[in-house]
Image 1 (cartoon, helix red, strand yellow):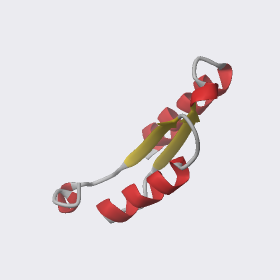
Image 2: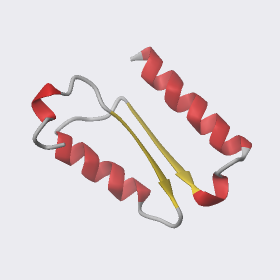
Image 3: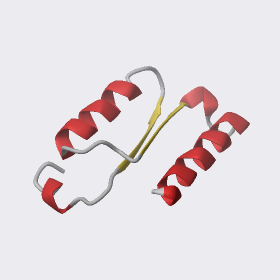
Length: 67
């Protein structure tokens, strides 16, 4: 990604995780690409296939659509 950072106009990041560390991963992705994301989302394994995940995904998509 760092090789393509100049060609990135907008970025959005998501992470699925079985434990912890998603916030750190998203921070590192922003550092590598040199941009603040227009949207971020972390879904834990325990949230998969739940209404919580559906709500997070809908919010993520909405943030991307509005930007």
